[in-house]
Image (cartoon, rainbow, N blue to C red):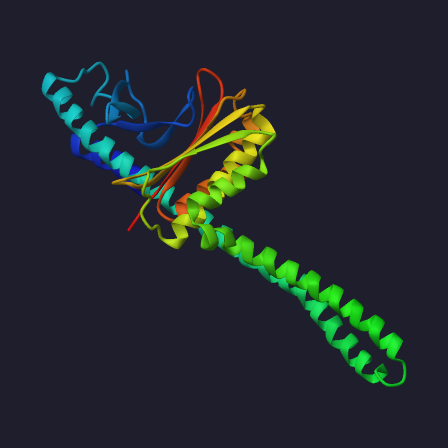
Length: 306
């Protein structure tokens, strides 16, 4: 993708024998930067907007062939036609770049998750199980000579074993919440909503008959809703939150909307949103957060279904 835009402006300049062609793209709402430049400006520049679905996604800056020259009407028609093709190319390049970035984020996220799981197993369960084995060996040696000491060691082993079971449950929960298998997605979300009762009223709206969803979609939807609702509790100063699930041609649509003061900047661009976006991107979907004009925030996600 990084070679597409320079090749585009070079091709336009060469084909039309223009001394200068530049492609400008928006870096922010108020700042535009040249994404690709060919040649040097030699006169008055003409700006040609690049439109995709009636939205300006960039513009071409071109200079006539010689000093003092102007583009003819035929040139203008040709440049307008080229701009349409260029807009399609720019949009394709942008989507390709976003896909590359998304894949890198997914790979990074997966490796970080593996590292975390390895650390939890190595630093948590590993030492506990090693200690249990050593203490069990000691208790066996003391069973006849000092039964009370052996009994105390066995009590310690039981405590450590219970702690290890809790660690395993926590690890399993992070992989796939048991509530999804026990209750299904909708009732698992209702169960979670009860845990924030008192801090926030959460209403969950779903179709009467939600179809059976792939396991990966259930996990992603569950975690996205949890993260979004937890953000409402932490930041929004809201009293009510509406969670909506629906199935359409694109996949599972979900939204979490609150009546609070609106998400702060650190929430809009923070780790919580990144986590939700990564979960959606892993499935080929997307997740966005919007401040509402009347106050409050809406998190939306689309998770494709096979």
